[in-house]
Image 1 (spheres, rainbow, N blue to C red):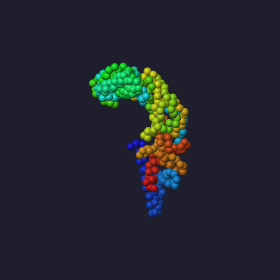
Image 2 (cartoon, rainbow, N blue to C red):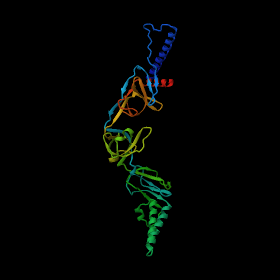
Image 3 (cartoon, rainbow, N blue to C red):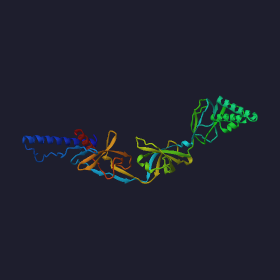
Image 4 (tube, helix red, strand yellow):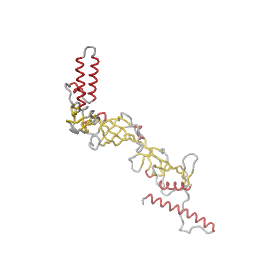
Length: 379
């Protein structure tokens, strides 16, 4: 049995003794007996019975009418937050610097010139595909060129349109401008080239393997600039903005600070964490920051304020946190609060439900919550 359970049992015993003493006193009074306890054997009884006070406007209040042993009341503290917001993040490729080599025909793979993690440059031949679709489209293009060269005066416009349409078809099949210009005879095989310079991030091309339109054969990415995605609590969002400078550190490179800016702020809040994601564009000289690596982000901003209460003041029940606000004259309001993470031991940061200067029950809040339920059951 934990400390709070011992306290609840002790409180219930005291209440039971109080009720029993009141009943016994009533019986002795009716029978005319002297109910004065003998000296040295006085029974300690509480001078109150908890009750709910219903208000026409506002929350119900718990009236205890007297002190609870060990109960303390403390003021809600407002402190100044530091001018730095820190958050954990994860590194990813900048999606604007990622490209794929996709098969646009049905065929098979005849050769490859790159494997996973290879560095490639834009225009480099990567994978050679075989497909009758290439031969058909190339034949149409070469026939169009021949027709245009032989067309009589006045029919050049039609021939140009045929050549343009055939060229566009080859481009849609994935052929580069250089390969189209070099065509002299139809061929069923074509080299697919790297669309950007970068690193081979994924490779699913196997020699002899069949391909279909839409199959992704290679994914290429660059890491000269990477993204770091981090979570910012909603009460801190007002302190950040697009373009704001930041620093990032990693365990892999503990002595190096990477610099970047806030590129995007999520339009949505995660209902489970009450946080929004931010996307930071960070310069990555030498490619030292790797996708999926963890990083710590520090954002320099204007100082803010936070409300703190002792952790002992919180009572968790069902799916919410509660505190008891001291309203004076033995009256206490049970109020729902929302909390956020906080690094100071023994205290909790409150984001909603309390105001600076209000007084809350610190110790014995669980016992007070038990009295609340007892009073609710009897009212």
